[in-house]
Image 1 (tube, rainbow, N blue to C red):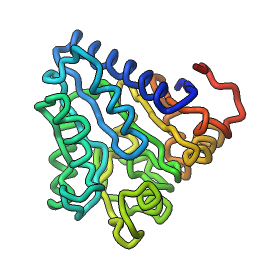
Image 2 (image 1 turned 90 degrees about the vertical axis):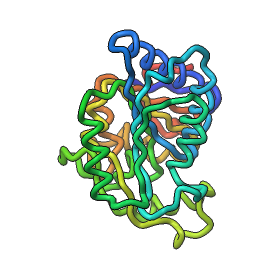
Image 3 (image 1 turned 90 degrees about the horizontal axis):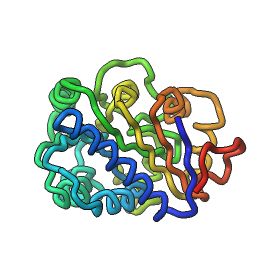
Amino acid sequence: MRIEVFDDRASLSRAAALQAAIGIRRAITQKGTARIIAATGASQIEFFAALTSIPEMEWRMVEMFHLDEYIGLPIEHPASFRKYLLERLIQKTGIEKYHLLDGEADPTVVCREVGHAITAASVDVAFVGIGENGHLAFNDPPADFETEDPYLIVALDEACRSQQVSEGWFSLLSEVPEKAISMSIRQILKSDEIICVAPDARKAPAVNLCFEGEISPMAPASILRNHPKTTVFLDRDSARLLNRKVISER
């Protein structure tokens, strides 16, 4: 794992997008297609804006998988991650092959069908973030580090649900769904490359816990330290509590 720290969100997002583009183009050159995992949330907005602005990307050769989604939330809701990905990635790029997690359908069937699709071949690049409680996808602490199931039905803890309110996706905690579909930890780690975008001072305690503390299910994103080709992109705000020398500063 490599940590890179940037002055601000804009420079962080541009650098992460350029690295993502390199990984996607490499896969297309080598295999004729690129399979990616897409995260959502406030932390990824500038990253996707930068990525979708890169010219001459062969998006029709990209197959996209959805990282997580609320159960029971209509696609029209502003917090719907399907809506987010359609508006910020799929419609902007023309990606034709994508696998969205339908939170309004039977979640067991969705987990099985999308899980079957994602395990059909390797994933080239995964985009992820880190929650304020250290979660990776919607794997809240204590996360399941052992299951081989590609997708899980998970219960969202109060810290995770409160973050969604503080970011403005919901007005009240009571409006935030209590369950979600999430890609599992082990499935994320099977990706050839992981790009973790985690800006903002609100993420600093989680960044410190995950990258200075023990690798533990109580700090789910700490498991990224076991992946040899993960790059964590931080701004100075999210990196402010890190004590050890980071590998690269920009």
